[in-house]
Image (cartoon, rainbow, N blue to C red; front, side, top):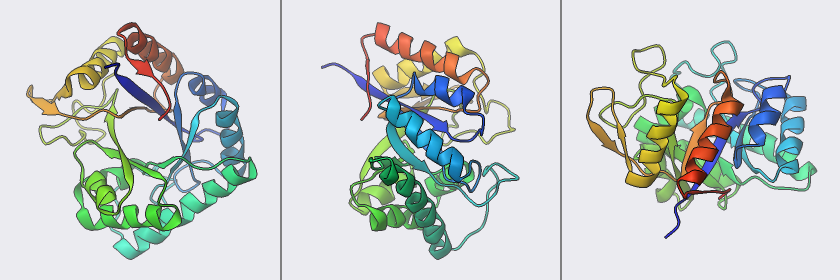
Length: 249
C-alpha cells in the first residue's frame, strides 16, 4: 500500500503574501487566517485566490480574538461564546471562497484555541458543533489523539489527525508550549526525519526521550517559521523520495 500524506500550511498571516506564495507551491492544504489573530478581508481574499490558482485545498484557521498575542495566549471563554467565535470566522472565510467559485474543505483552529481544545472536552465540543452547524461536510483538523478529534467524531464530522514537523512533543502527546525548552525543532533535517517516522512508523520522540504514538493524516508547516517555504519544499522532496505520496486530501 502506498502511504499518502497531506502537507498543510498556516497562511494569510502576512499582508505581504510573498512567503505565502512560495509556501503554496509546496503544500497541499491551506489554513487561512480569518482576521482574529492575523489577516484582514483583503488578505483573506487574495490568499483564497492564490490557493485556488495552485489547486490547494482551502481551510479556515479560526482563533481567539487576540491579534496582539497572535492568538497564542490561552483565554478563558465559555463554550457558547467559543461556538459563536468559530462559526463567525468559518463563515467569513467561506464567503470569500464562495465568491471565488469554490468551497471550504476543512477547519483547523489556530494557536491557543487549538491547544486548549485538544485538552478541554467542552471547548472541543463547541468547536466541533460550530463546524458541523456551518457545514457537516467540512473536515475538522486536530492534534493526533486529542479531545478535539474525539469531539469531531462524536459530532459526525470527518476528521484529520495532525502532526507537526517543527514542534516538540510531551510524553502525553501534547505539544511543548511555546517558550519552553524543546518547543521548536529548528534543524530542517531533524524535522524531516521526525516527519518520516511519524508517517511511516506512527511515532515521534518526546522531549523526555520516550516515544509517543501518533496518527499522521496531515503535517503542519507553520507559515511564520523562518524559511518556511524552503523547508516545505525540502520536506516534500524527502517524503516523495521515500515513496510517500504527497497529495491534497
